Image 1 (cartoon, rainbow, N blue to C red):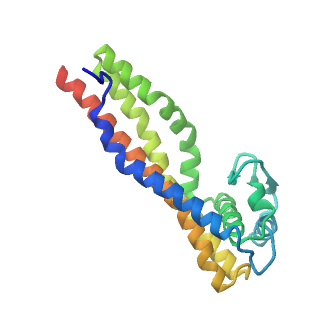
Image 2: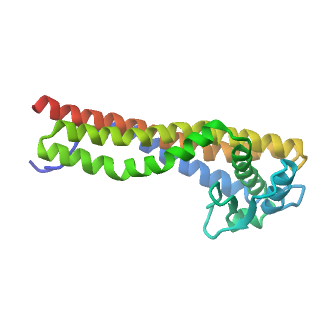
Image 3: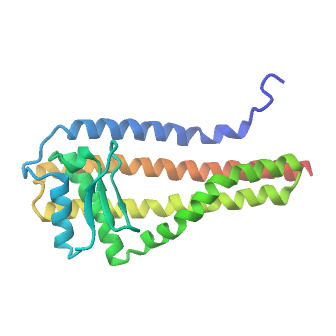
Length: 231
């Protein structure tokens, strides 16, 4: 056999790979376009994040700059809203959209948004499952143990659940962001649509991640099923 490690189930992942590549291209293109368009308000991403937090009566979340490109995130453990330099210091439409999106996560946390609570609780379990699922599965396949291989599949289910619950969390944060930016007059009507484009492109990466997780689970199920047939 020329390719002794060839796995025909890998073809299942092709749609997810294509979508991930498209999403990445879409994000980069959309962000590059609207990061060059200055908002009429002239406020920076940091300004908007702080003002939105104050409007929501959230006074214990610190807005700080973190190094890296588009490393923006909300840290619920330390109650910090971290923005990359390209967002923190910029007054572009893209920067304001991203800053408002991350502020949306802080508001979700403050108001006890249930899907976010589930995601936060699932995160450590999903991380363990992602690290151990394939090693356990392949050890089970090599050892001829269907139960061990099945355990690897179960471990990956946490990853799938995490990715699926991430979708409503991210879309809700984006919807909050647009409503806050428009309602507070931070962006004009003409600027809202570009901001939506930036956030929609970013959301597509989460859709790709969820699809990849679901198809990977299907692949693991097929691999463990092959072992059962061999038995």
